[in-house]
Length: 249
Image (cartoon, rainbow, N blue to C red; front, side):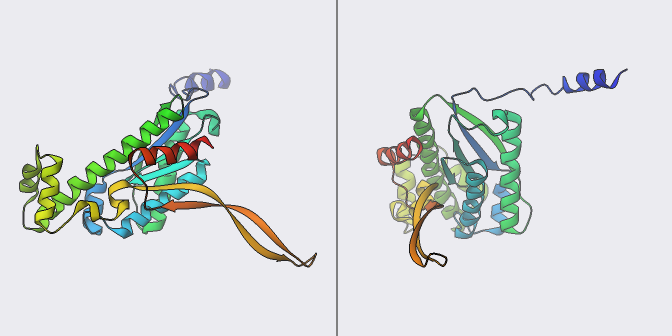
């Protein structure tokens, strides 16, 4: 068999290599920590640990920078990265984007944490900015739901309940009942830090720096880009308006 024929035959078996995200569509790449329930329980305070949150923010910033994304959002052990319709890394190859994003997240988190951790990845597609705003609203709502559940679960666990007892106690429990449960333990959910209840957003912003040009001997001002990390995101319509402004600019 000729080499060219062998190569062509083998490449033809890379069934998904030619799969690409449609042109003109918004993409959101979402990475999730693999096995992070056990990983975090063994190493961090529950239900929320500022140290773990810092690691996730560093990982989100690495993804935002590597992909030149418009916006990144992190809650719990997941990160969503918004790529605009003009994004053309690897010709919008699904295999490449998924594998690279999981690799970048795993490497960034591992480097920051000092021990190995792994992420998986997926791609979401949207036709316009409205779809993207719906997506991030969904993820923020999930963050609030998970935060309430997490606080209830770990409050019960710290009060002496077993895993099974805490899980059963919360099955079918309404939002108002969960808030009442926390209140009985001296916790007002609405008073908890916003980043725990709403997640954290990252985006690019411009800032100016003043300096002195040593050659010309004059004062100069330069404009640079940097990543803004927002721990106090708004909610609902205000959050939708913020993201619409950020990605529509």
